[in-house]
Length: 210
Image (cartoon, rainbow, N blue to C red; front, top):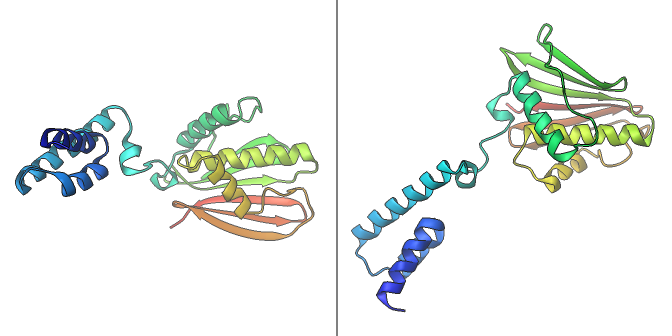
């Protein structure tokens, strides 16, 4: 491999795949140390600038979204509705009306047996709860979908498999209408998820993990 080809390959990797570029530079660079440092900094700066301009900040630094940023009720409603539109467009599970916050609490009733409740402090949500008492398979299916959309809204970096893992950790992928009593907890990012069930009545909680 000629010096010209080595240098061209190194610069290309530095621009588009910095970690590989650094390794290539360490092994094959024909430049002196000072030149290598200048090239690495310039190419890395270009890589970051290009991704920020394209809106790909998450690809560089990881997800910057999540409950840890704290959400207002309206922020959450928008995130939830985006998840509902993307993941369950035919299930009619959107939150169409803005929340009315009453003494730091807001509620939304999906059905008489499926209710969302949020706790607000200083305009920001600190906890969300789903109260469910499913009595048949259809009600259980709707409950699971609402829980999945809640997780997608609070941890948008999780894919379908990861969201399913949260539900499995909470034993929610079995029949939630069963007459079981249990408490389970799991954490993703800065969100602590827990489920409490007594005689088929399920309380699912998502809270900021301090």
